[in-house]
Image (cartoon, rainbow, N blue to C red; front, side, top):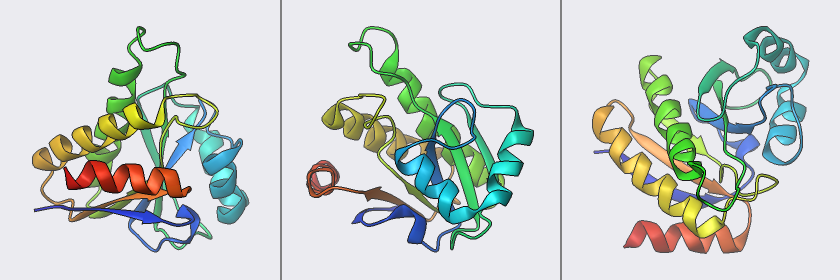
Length: 168
């Protein structure tokens, strides 16, 4: 059975098989988690991302971790929140589902996710947590080689939100 946990930390410091990057469609870095991952990983990550040709919302693509303690980075693009009536939850769920499938397909077993799409993209944090946890619980049933999933939060509010959701 896959262990699901919550950690309040800087995702760029985690020594796991893969950290997930809440990327933009270019995959070439940006603000928030994306910018932090690119800064710590170094130029090699940027160069490899350029070769991937971008990423559509809900898709996932993988690169090396370069100077990060994580071996790999899985890049996924969340949806912009447009009020909830434009398939945003389905696209967010695809981010988690496709990231787990990609990790499992490459023999990875420990993955850390940030809170995808809740920053600049404006997805409500409580709804995003519900989608993330429900989708991960379903996806790891299909991919039992995933031993652990860490929801790596940045704020106390996100930490408490995910702890509350995981305990129910």
